[in-house]
Amino acid sequence: MRYLSYLLLGGIVLGTMACDRPQNTEDRQARQEKVDRAAHQAGEDLYKAAQKTKEVTKEAVEGVKKAGREAKDGWEDAKHKDPARDSTHPDQ
Image 1 (cartoon, helix red, strand yellow):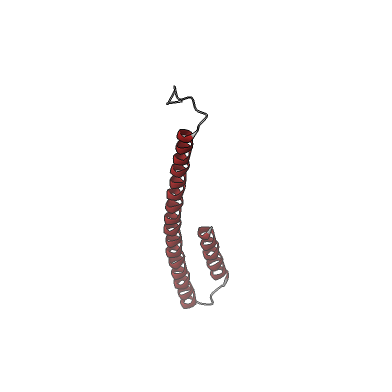
Image 2 (spheres, rainbow, N blue to C red):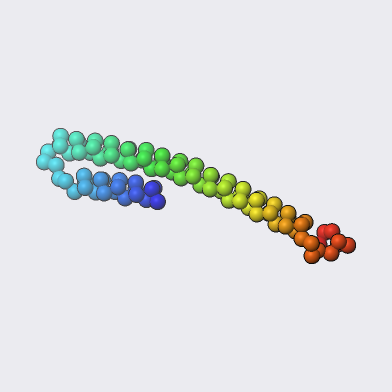
């Protein structure tokens, strides 16, 4: 979600700068440098957002795996404590 926000913000900034017509070559070069700096900053921000997303996703996956192991352990404990099980078939 943050990635999309940065992408839209970069597009708006670049679009706004592109619509403003400079009067001479020096103005055009100055504006191009601004656009280049803005694009560079947008790229850096997008990279940081992607890295943060990667970290958060990894943490979420670890949390889901841990919850799955806990659920399995609970299932196994309940299965072994069930008094209704037939004692002649321990693997049932």
